[in-house]
Image (cartoon, rainbow, N blue to C red; front, side, top):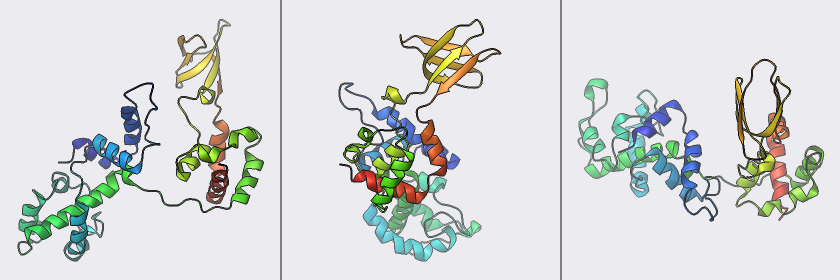
Length: 287
């Protein structure tokens, strides 16, 4: 049976938050070993981690789902849509009947009886095997929507590397040096990770990318350090000695922030798709 956590996340559109929690959960074990993060997992590992976190239940039987696809299209799609996402009838992706079933143990008898009072016919003339195949097809549609970890990125090296090199020269070299890009293509496991890495090179373990701040207090004191929390009302810093300081942002408190990734934030606002693909194609050549 699918876990209630999945239902809540799916209904609220917050599935993306699962990636954050998964990344935190998998960073355990031997602290001396390289930590496994969501980004450097294989697709199979991402799918399994997402499935475990969301409580998605049993893995759909894909062979059975293939058999069930034409049966579903012939008997169900006109009401529930070709991918079970709703049409004249309800969306089945968030259906309690579907999410409460694993391999047809509940859906098969439900489909045999139908809901004539609500316009859903009974499928008593179909065999249990056929109805189970339909159930597996619907479960696979839920899987495709819910399990973001199972998504596979196709080839993204579709840009012009020469134009990418020109973009880097015009937009990146004011902050970076040539050494920044030396062998950058070999530092990432895949082109999509490379693309994500150069657009937003966030790395919690890299102190050079940490947001820092200098706070001047009304009594003339100055506190500087790495920002761990910040809001309109308070800022918390960790100084060079490792001491944490929480300062209320009251009248007279001056805060000067320094975000090394601010230029990347500005770049993202104007980065065109062609430029993104061109730069990725160029950086991939720098092995």
